[in-house]
Image (tube, rainbow, N blue to C red; front, side, top):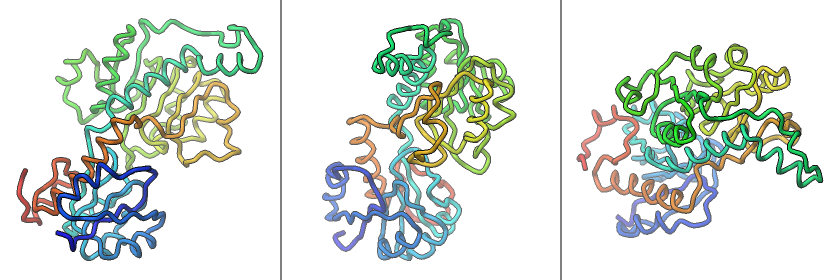
Length: 330
């Protein structure tokens, strides 16, 4: 196995001990790169049998240029960096880690919601600036009995449901792919988008980024929301039309936002959000805990190891690739 080449296309991690623990058993040494463009991925991963990918683009051009490539393992749940059609056509396995950071992101969404509604961050900043006066936060409304609308009802929002309900918050959700029975088992009402916008006091976004969801929350959506509603986003920045959100906040169409993700990251120093007290900003950090990072890295490397050992990985994204490959089921 020592002749196999496994490349990390890009990363912001400080250790690769979990990956090495998995791949050392196969005699594979990781090659670490920091690619940002298609051209850099093609140049630095030219002979790669497998790549571990964070944010670098794995486009059709990249996939068709890497003749030895067998598997792309994503660090995370999302896979919008990878052209799935091109990978499947080329017989390349795409894998992710679907059960990664479920508690971390749902906890973070709840933290942003609590801080937004109770205006904790606003009052903290005021106190540190010498203003000891709770009236800067007026109005603050009781959370018990309010309604949380979830856009998307996968694993993370299902975890968030239990946490919100513990505060006495009612939960509804929009997700055309989730069976009604799953929602009912958690005492959640499945609704259409318009009803969610109109009836929710809080909206938490948990959508994947694709051509159907990009900027799905735009001007019309904000106009349907309650004026005292808060929107929380811990999924992908581009699912919200940022200019529409800015206008909605400036015009008082909604009360505030808690954002862990943005359309463009990091945020531009001239961005209007930086001067909006009703907006809480975090640096795309909801995924993080010491335990979650170690688990993600180990499972991402295991996806690679599985394919290189002749097995389909436990977390296979492009199921249609099975028609082309003679790999074993684990």
